[in-house]
Length: 430
Length: 82
Image (tube, rainbow over all chains, first blue to last red; front, side, top):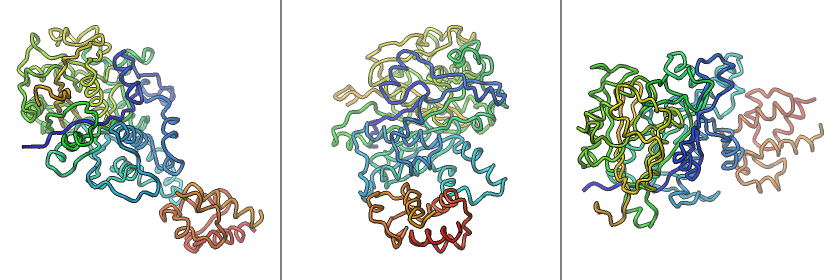
């Protein structure tokens, strides 16, 4: 029998809140974290709004000493703060200075989509071009290497199990969690920190602006810019931040007597092969449906048991297609469709951090029995009008919410899907 | 700048890289930067850059390689700043 995996700790730094109380309040109240970004206007971006965790420079300075801060760009800062938050939330203390012990049972899979682009743009390129290579100092590699986030976390927490960083574009955060679940299931680790992060930088967002896939029509009204499932959706809003979940073998969690947020029943990743309508930038619908079906099968549940969906739903033309894919994959039409929501309606699309922040939102909703509203879709896209009654427009208190499906899709035609279940000690699944 | 002032400035340059700040309390010219202060060897290049910025000098790679103790650094800086 495979081991069961539960969520025992959460750390989150989202554009609409850092820390669980602030993030949960923002979710419940439908508070948007999208703001006008003056720098984007100065740089002639068509999209001048974005989601950036507020006051984060002050926050990370309160966590780390000067020596560590010198090696932290945005991306690593979000990952490091949320790793510490998640670790403490799971009931652990940070290692004391001078403690030389290693935690061989715990690892980390924490990725990002774009990574240390801000460091490359602001330090590496100008200084190399000026012939000042030696003036770069010792801190560049650890900030631009793809494993920069997981490597920093390993040092902060003395982790001795697998420590790595995955990358699969906007599917990164979900994929990290699925990989970590599989490692715990296989008995190779008792506990894993898993999630993703992404910096806030015009250098990260420029390519998307050039592709005209980010929102350029709501610069005057930032809170209305991210419009998943809306007929007036005009592209995604770039976001940033990070989230990390502490995933744990159920037996280990029980031995510790720790609070459990949710169980991860199953998950799946795949690729649409960039065929059958799929491409570098668009998902093959059959690939999406297969991924959802595989996740449901892995979870060992019937599709009708799914109460709610937290979709990828970025506010592009792909949203109606995604809703149709869910319907077909689950065999559930508008009449018995689950609730469906987009956390991106509040925080934008946080790229490599998106899946992780949204999984944190799912775990919180299951633990505390509510469905956050999906903003800015009063004018539901005509293609999915029949599903409109299943989109929560206000916070819905629902203590009976049991099973949540969460999906993410990314450039390269990669897909990921997770199935979460509310944790109920002595529940019917026990 | 006097030798004493350079020494005091060196202590401040080194401080962020010394995990146990108490190791700096009794530091002398003979204190070894890596062995005694436990500074991560990769960070020595940052210490050298810190010296260049603080004293307005350029330290060549060969000269940097010769710095083992705080006194080594102070002597080099004194010579360069002349």
